[in-house]
Length: 330
Image (cartoon, rainbow, N blue to C red; front, side, top):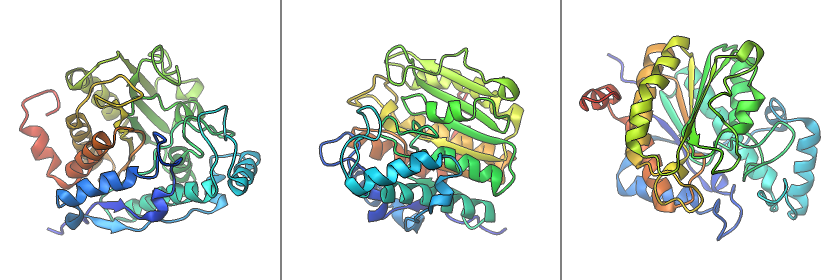
């Protein structure tokens, strides 16, 4: 039997450039916090390490409007002001930094589709708040939206699963594809009555041709692993019903207990189990194609633990690990 290619993980200084300065929750030190734990656990020796790749404007324009990209370029040159109404500051070279985020995600897609890698993880990515025509919530661009448009246009996929376990609702993805029947959307997030962006009610199930293809699950503050485990069979049944041909996981670590700006209480075990279950679904329906992106997470120890759990689940015999629990995850 031919051994599957090793999971690809993207790491390098160009990917770390996407951050808003020392002391900001989304600072440039987030990548190194993850990578230190990867090395300490010996994971780096078991992975295919890929250098960041830079996207061109055409790739960004698959999702974003030209007017917005012009504004982003101007802010990037000036390196001052805000890209939105106060959450997302400009810095010199913000456009170029965002291009490395998007380009790394797109390179991972190419490798997954070609079979050059089996799973992939881009830690500094998952910028799920940006709209087609604006920045939002620390997100200058929306690499998830760019990824989905690329899967549709370049590869002709018509069943793409987007699963988001970040504490914040992935509003930039949801509203961009709310009426799109190609996008099977699942989002477990802190209830919008308590956390930005205030969206993602359970009643938001899609519009028009996309109705019934979107599953929003608001979680109460302090929700932990046990509630995710209780809900997961519903999520998995939803995904099974639609048989996606590609899986995109936004693995935000701000849903872990102790994050400074959110109120959920998961442990890294939720990220491990969700990834393992999605690996199993991807093997069944999508030739193993699972791309995970790091998303949020502002406690450095938390994000390192959660993202390493994602990578470990990709590396593990994920079906074997899940089957040993005797729980609804199995």
